[in-house]
Length: 317
Image (cartoon, rainbow, N blue to C red; front, side, top):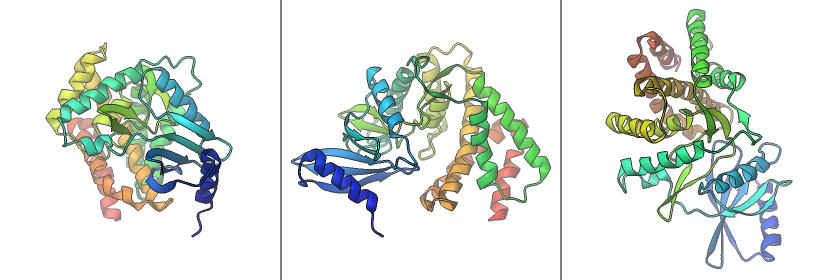
């Protein structure tokens, strides 16, 4: 199939460079409608972002990129932009993701570096920024994704009622915790290692929300599982470094419930990506997300019914 957007991107790049002396290759896709291409020219490398303006808001990307850089967060520089067409030319941060760096260096040191950067993110003064809030409406809409896409339509009403009761508890847990700048996808595929520094990408969906949300994204990652001891060590590290006011045990429960909110949402999103968008590769990550949910069911007796809900999908398959 002919790629009209790619043709338009190449035309735009020709105008920027004043010639066609460059090569273009696919760099990556993500779970949205954005695509990334690596542009190589005269021993220099850039990244071109294709974000269809009817589906993605590139203006937000530019705005948040500037905000993060002003606050000492290493993000790609924006070299040129055409918001009307939905094209950005940005700094190439290399190809070593946080995920790829794991195993090549000390895991705990790498995660501590990511936590230190996260704490910097959370100190950003969001009050003067026009950011959306992770409010009750958004939280419930996200949780509803598991009902709409992941669960079988035959789920019995009593289980559904329990699930909606849980949704209310998870929403209150989020709203009753300190509200900070939230990246919203702070995980191993959206962090890069550039010249031994941590750099942050894919930040355009940032909101104001719970201080435990990004930490959950990092430590209970959809794409990488930490050992139980490592997780506890890093959670303790954050609790100390961020000077959390509540006790560690209270914070751990807040973290667990925030994780449950995120993971229930992700189950719905990953199924939707497959069923609606044809991105079937995300199905392979569902077992780890289910494992996280079942761990919470084991840890907190009042959530034991989550085992029945997860098992329903096995029967339905």
